[in-house]
Amino acid sequence: MSNELLFDAVGGVEAEWRDRKVNLPVRYFEASNFTLSFRTPLDVVRSLLPGVIHPLRWGRSEAVTAIVFNDFPKSDIGGYQEVMIGFPVSIEKQALPYLGLRSFAKQSGAVFVHQMILDDQFAIDLGVDISGYPKRMGDIELDFDSFMVHCRWREDGEEVLTITAPRPTPEPVDKRDRTDLITTKNGYVLRSQFVGYTGREGQVGAESIEVEFGAHARSDELRSLMQGKCLGGSLVLDRQLTLSQPLEAWR
Figure 1: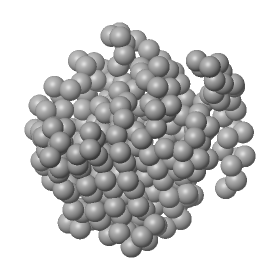
Figure 2 (figure 1 turned 90 degrees about the horizontal axis):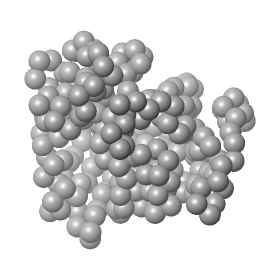
Figure 3 (figure 1 turned 30 degrees about the vertical axis):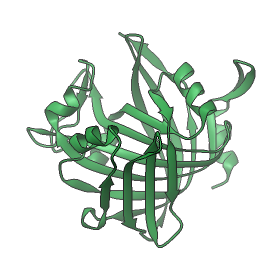
Figure 4 (figure 1 turned 120 degrees about the horizontal axis):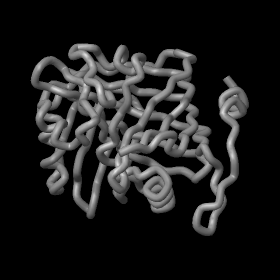
Protein backbone atom coordinates (compact mmCIF):
# COMPACT_ATOMS: atom_id res chain seq x y z
CA MET A 1 0.00 0.00 0.00
CA SER A 2 1.48 3.37 -0.97
CA ASN A 3 1.56 6.45 1.22
CA GLU A 4 -0.79 8.27 -1.13
CA LEU A 5 -3.63 5.78 -0.64
CA LEU A 6 -3.70 6.45 3.09
CA PHE A 7 -2.83 10.12 3.34
CA ASP A 8 -4.80 11.40 0.34
CA ALA A 9 -7.96 9.85 1.77
CA VAL A 10 -7.81 11.99 4.92
CA GLY A 11 -6.42 15.17 3.36
CA GLY A 12 -4.97 17.85 5.61
CA VAL A 13 -4.49 21.56 6.15
CA GLU A 14 -1.53 23.69 7.16
CA ALA A 15 -2.11 25.39 10.50
CA GLU A 16 -0.19 28.08 12.38
CA TRP A 17 1.14 27.00 15.77
CA ARG A 18 3.46 29.27 17.73
CA ASP A 19 6.11 30.30 15.21
CA ARG A 20 5.69 27.25 12.98
CA LYS A 21 3.31 25.73 10.46
CA VAL A 22 2.03 22.23 11.17
CA ASN A 23 0.09 19.85 8.94
CA LEU A 24 -3.21 18.73 10.51
CA PRO A 25 -3.97 15.93 10.90
CA VAL A 26 -0.37 15.00 11.70
CA ARG A 27 0.94 12.32 9.34
CA TYR A 28 3.28 9.52 10.44
CA PHE A 29 4.94 8.17 7.31
CA GLU A 30 6.86 5.49 9.21
CA ALA A 31 5.88 3.97 12.54
CA SER A 32 6.18 0.80 14.60
CA ASN A 33 5.21 -0.19 18.13
CA PHE A 34 5.36 -2.88 20.77
CA THR A 35 2.27 -3.15 22.98
CA LEU A 36 1.88 -5.05 26.26
CA SER A 37 -1.33 -5.57 28.20
CA PHE A 38 -1.69 -6.32 31.90
CA ARG A 39 -4.60 -7.17 34.17
CA THR A 40 -4.86 -4.45 36.83
CA PRO A 41 -7.06 -4.19 39.94
CA LEU A 42 -10.26 -2.46 38.88
CA ASP A 43 -10.22 0.01 41.78
CA VAL A 44 -6.72 1.18 40.83
CA VAL A 45 -7.77 2.07 37.28
CA ARG A 46 -11.10 3.58 38.33
CA SER A 47 -9.28 5.95 40.68
CA LEU A 48 -7.40 7.40 37.67
CA LEU A 49 -10.45 7.98 35.44
CA PRO A 50 -13.14 10.69 35.28
CA GLY A 51 -16.60 9.55 36.35
CA VAL A 52 -18.05 9.32 32.82
CA ILE A 53 -15.20 7.07 31.64
CA HIS A 54 -15.46 3.35 32.47
CA PRO A 55 -12.57 0.86 32.27
CA LEU A 56 -12.82 -2.37 30.33
CA ARG A 57 -13.47 -4.96 33.03
CA TRP A 58 -11.60 -8.25 33.06
CA GLY A 59 -14.05 -10.07 35.26
CA ARG A 60 -15.47 -8.54 38.44
CA SER A 61 -12.35 -7.07 40.01
CA GLU A 62 -9.82 -6.34 37.25
CA ALA A 63 -9.31 -3.86 34.43
CA VAL A 64 -6.64 -3.69 31.69
CA THR A 65 -3.54 -1.50 31.42
CA ALA A 66 -1.84 -1.13 28.02
CA ILE A 67 1.77 0.03 27.69
CA VAL A 68 2.75 1.03 24.17
CA PHE A 69 6.32 1.73 23.05
CA ASN A 70 6.13 3.79 19.84
CA ASP A 71 8.87 4.49 17.33
CA PHE A 72 8.06 7.39 14.97
CA PRO A 73 11.18 7.90 12.80
CA LYS A 74 9.46 10.04 10.14
CA SER A 75 6.45 12.31 10.60
CA ASP A 76 5.22 15.85 9.95
CA ILE A 77 6.72 16.88 13.29
CA GLY A 78 9.99 15.00 12.94
CA GLY A 79 11.21 11.76 14.47
CA TYR A 80 10.76 10.76 18.09
CA GLN A 81 10.10 7.85 20.42
CA GLU A 82 7.35 7.52 22.99
CA VAL A 83 5.88 5.43 25.76
CA MET A 84 2.12 5.62 26.28
CA ILE A 85 0.27 4.18 29.27
CA GLY A 86 -3.44 3.84 28.65
CA PHE A 87 -6.59 2.04 29.71
CA PRO A 88 -9.18 0.55 27.33
CA VAL A 89 -12.40 2.36 28.27
CA SER A 90 -15.98 2.98 27.28
CA ILE A 91 -17.71 6.35 27.54
CA GLU A 92 -20.80 6.89 29.75
CA LYS A 93 -21.92 3.24 29.47
CA GLN A 94 -19.96 0.33 30.92
CA ALA A 95 -18.85 -2.35 28.49
CA LEU A 96 -19.58 -6.00 29.28
CA PRO A 97 -16.81 -7.82 31.17
CA TYR A 98 -14.72 -10.50 29.43
CA LEU A 99 -15.31 -8.76 26.11
CA GLY A 100 -11.68 -9.16 25.04
CA LEU A 101 -9.45 -6.40 23.67
CA ARG A 102 -10.04 -7.05 19.97
CA SER A 103 -13.82 -7.30 20.29
CA PHE A 104 -13.80 -4.26 22.54
CA ALA A 105 -11.98 -2.19 19.92
CA LYS A 106 -14.39 -3.32 17.20
CA GLN A 107 -17.31 -2.11 19.32
CA SER A 108 -15.96 1.46 19.36
CA GLY A 109 -14.00 1.11 22.55
CA ALA A 110 -11.45 3.84 23.25
CA VAL A 111 -8.14 4.23 25.09
CA PHE A 112 -7.82 6.70 27.96
CA VAL A 113 -4.33 8.26 27.86
CA HIS A 114 -2.93 8.20 31.38
CA GLN A 115 0.67 9.15 30.62
CA MET A 116 2.88 9.86 27.60
CA ILE A 117 6.67 10.05 27.83
CA LEU A 118 8.59 11.39 24.81
CA ASP A 119 12.17 12.22 23.92
CA ASP A 120 11.37 15.32 21.81
CA GLN A 121 10.30 18.68 23.28
CA PHE A 122 8.53 19.94 20.15
CA ALA A 123 6.30 16.86 20.00
CA ILE A 124 5.58 17.28 23.72
CA ASP A 125 4.59 20.93 23.41
CA LEU A 126 2.37 20.35 20.37
CA GLY A 127 0.56 17.42 21.98
CA VAL A 128 -0.03 19.29 25.25
CA ASP A 129 -1.19 22.54 23.63
CA ILE A 130 -3.44 21.17 20.90
CA SER A 131 -4.59 17.72 22.06
CA GLY A 132 -4.32 18.05 25.84
CA TYR A 133 -2.23 14.90 26.21
CA PRO A 134 -0.35 14.45 29.52
CA LYS A 135 3.11 14.44 27.94
CA ARG A 136 6.51 14.87 29.57
CA MET A 137 10.18 14.37 28.73
CA GLY A 138 12.05 11.11 29.16
CA ASP A 139 14.73 8.93 27.57
CA ILE A 140 13.40 6.12 25.38
CA GLU A 141 15.47 3.36 23.77
CA LEU A 142 13.76 0.93 21.40
CA ASP A 143 15.13 -1.98 19.38
CA PHE A 144 12.60 -3.81 17.21
CA ASP A 145 15.09 -5.06 14.60
CA SER A 146 17.28 -7.53 16.51
CA PHE A 147 16.39 -11.09 17.52
CA MET A 148 15.03 -9.60 20.77
CA VAL A 149 12.57 -6.75 21.31
CA HIS A 150 14.14 -4.32 23.78
CA CYS A 151 12.32 -1.30 25.28
CA ARG A 152 13.93 0.97 27.87
CA TRP A 153 12.43 4.00 29.62
CA ARG A 154 14.45 6.39 31.81
CA GLU A 155 13.63 9.68 33.53
CA ASP A 156 15.86 12.07 35.48
CA GLY A 157 18.82 9.81 34.78
CA GLU A 158 17.19 6.80 36.50
CA GLU A 159 15.70 3.61 35.15
CA VAL A 160 11.90 3.45 35.17
CA LEU A 161 11.07 0.34 33.14
CA THR A 162 12.78 -2.16 30.85
CA ILE A 163 10.92 -4.70 28.72
CA THR A 164 12.63 -7.57 26.90
CA ALA A 165 10.96 -10.20 24.73
CA PRO A 166 11.89 -12.54 21.87
CA ARG A 167 11.19 -10.86 18.56
CA PRO A 168 8.29 -12.56 16.78
CA THR A 169 8.23 -13.03 13.02
CA PRO A 170 5.71 -10.41 11.89
CA GLU A 171 3.25 -11.68 9.30
CA PRO A 172 1.57 -9.50 6.63
CA VAL A 173 -1.85 -8.31 7.75
CA ASP A 174 -2.51 -5.42 5.34
CA LYS A 175 -5.29 -3.78 7.35
CA ARG A 176 -6.66 -0.37 8.24
CA ASP A 177 -7.65 0.41 11.80
CA ARG A 178 -8.83 3.24 14.04
CA THR A 179 -8.15 4.07 17.67
CA ASP A 180 -10.05 6.70 19.65
CA LEU A 181 -7.87 8.41 22.27
CA ILE A 182 -9.51 10.00 25.32
CA THR A 183 -7.89 12.53 27.64
CA THR A 184 -8.95 15.40 29.90
CA LYS A 185 -8.01 19.09 29.90
CA ASN A 186 -9.41 22.03 31.91
CA GLY A 187 -12.39 19.99 33.06
CA TYR A 188 -13.24 18.76 29.55
CA VAL A 189 -13.07 15.26 28.15
CA LEU A 190 -11.35 15.32 24.74
CA ARG A 191 -11.55 12.65 22.03
CA SER A 192 -9.07 12.48 19.16
CA GLN A 193 -8.38 9.69 16.71
CA PHE A 194 -5.62 7.67 15.09
CA VAL A 195 -6.43 6.28 11.64
CA GLY A 196 -3.79 3.91 10.36
CA TYR A 197 -2.55 1.14 8.15
CA THR A 198 -0.65 -1.88 9.48
CA GLY A 199 1.61 -3.86 7.19
CA ARG A 200 2.95 -6.62 9.50
CA GLU A 201 2.18 -7.85 12.99
CA GLY A 202 3.49 -10.56 15.33
CA GLN A 203 2.39 -11.80 18.74
CA VAL A 204 4.53 -12.57 21.81
CA GLY A 205 3.35 -14.90 24.57
CA ALA A 206 3.16 -13.50 28.07
CA GLU A 207 5.43 -16.20 29.50
CA SER A 208 8.41 -15.00 27.43
CA ILE A 209 8.15 -11.28 28.29
CA GLU A 210 10.59 -9.99 30.92
CA VAL A 211 9.66 -6.90 32.96
CA GLU A 212 12.26 -5.05 35.04
CA PHE A 213 11.35 -2.06 37.20
CA GLY A 214 13.89 0.63 37.96
CA ALA A 215 14.60 2.74 41.05
CA HIS A 216 12.72 5.86 39.87
CA ALA A 217 9.71 6.93 41.91
CA ARG A 218 7.43 6.37 38.90
CA SER A 219 8.33 2.68 38.96
CA ASP A 220 6.19 2.25 42.06
CA GLU A 221 3.08 3.42 40.21
CA LEU A 222 3.88 1.08 37.35
CA ARG A 223 4.09 -1.84 39.79
CA SER A 224 0.53 -1.12 40.91
CA LEU A 225 -0.68 -1.03 37.29
CA MET A 226 1.29 -4.10 36.16
CA GLN A 227 0.92 -6.30 39.24
CA GLY A 228 -1.60 -8.58 37.57
CA LYS A 229 -1.11 -11.20 34.90
CA CYS A 230 0.51 -10.13 31.63
CA LEU A 231 -1.82 -10.81 28.70
CA GLY A 232 0.95 -10.84 26.08
CA GLY A 233 2.54 -8.46 23.60
CA SER A 234 2.20 -7.42 19.97
CA LEU A 235 4.87 -6.07 17.59
CA VAL A 236 3.55 -3.94 14.72
CA LEU A 237 5.75 -2.91 11.77
CA ASP A 238 5.27 -1.10 8.44
CA ARG A 239 2.82 1.28 10.07
CA GLN A 240 1.41 4.52 8.68
CA LEU A 241 -0.82 6.82 10.73
CA THR A 242 -2.69 10.09 10.79
CA LEU A 243 -3.52 11.72 14.14
CA SER A 244 -6.47 14.08 14.26
CA GLN A 245 -6.77 16.91 16.71
CA PRO A 246 -9.72 16.67 19.14
CA LEU A 247 -12.93 15.72 17.36
CA GLU A 248 -15.10 16.20 20.44
CA ALA A 249 -14.93 17.99 23.79
CA TRP A 250 -17.49 17.81 26.56
CA ARG A 251 -17.84 18.18 30.34
